[in-house]
Image (cartoon, rainbow, N blue to C red; front, side, top):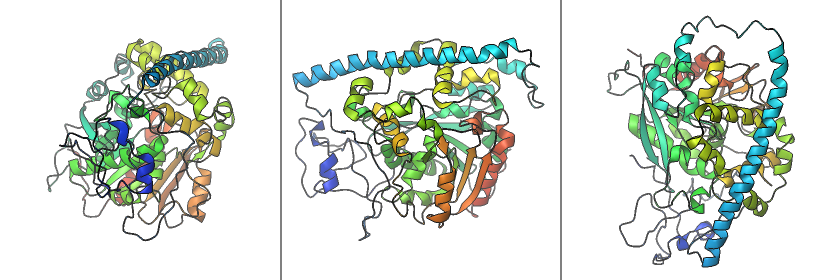
Length: 518
């Protein structure tokens, strides 16, 4: 396991450190000195842990006399609602919150699934009655019978082996102590180049409620496998915190503090840790980054002023699929119009302070795969207007075996609650004259003509008017694409995979010669 990069330290007498310090997170910890740093990335050798559970924002330009305003606008949620040591009443209150919110949020989920299922049945009845020509047959799909025999499992390595690859589980630790699951695609046909290194590295990051499993369930035409085979790239599939059951160096997953994070922490800690790990593991100074939805929303925020703009020096290019910066028209409808009026205190009573709707997690573990994936598709088709129009139907159960994945309640509040993304219609402060600086890497944007969850046009306008120092190497609208079709559509290879390779090849450092798969 390779550690995350060192960040500039923030002393414990700074205003931000005082605001977010978790000194009393460990009741027997000796009080730290006012002169020393309070942030470490590893376990302390002393009896008292000198570790920040909710670290203050790393200062990206620590030596600059100019203070840069952060582009991030957080929701109004109290990050210190549950800080030990707990009194007896605190413990009773926390237990009651866990029990009551489990049943309330589960009821909400069940109602949504039932309503969505009813709507689904009504919509498909005409299709059943209508005599059609059957599913579309693709010329390249000459091995359909074999793929229909695949099992629906939650093991990413199983799908890789079915296609002649393997996947290696790696572990990455963030600076605030979270362990992240990294999936590394192993291609047995690759051999090292003359310099001993493998192919140029590509990191792919998933969207909200998803995981690395999203990029390996389209058989040999999966994005991860296609880039490995046809581009000769070393492909790494990142996962954000809490996905695949990953934990924390000091906190239990049952601890409310474990779930006390939003997209801000993903931008400050998760993405930098993933990027640095790939660079260290491959020996490359720069890597290509592909992010889908929240995955690129994390990237845009991480690279913004006041966060981690220097991360751009590690990226040869940034490929954003369905850029999650500006909200789409879907957020003006139900249930977003209701959720964005909900304040944090009310949200806690409905959805709790742990993971969002824990019933989804239990369902993932214990509900039969076909039932889980069917209900997952039905729910997301209703909430986000995803359809299977462009998909091979046999893949759908495999796709939704990895969706949804655990997300913190606080994070969904940031997306949907009062003052959140659906309310403000943007992930960042639109009043700031500038979001990004010269560190920002070459940018390629792909957006769908049938994507109603996010909008790319306002972002493109801002890039042209206020952020024209950024090199936009591609802005491509895929007319038939919905939100996830850049990698799930049956025609995704023809729509955009070759363009991804062109973007990577046109921006990779000249010193890194092209790598040909063997």
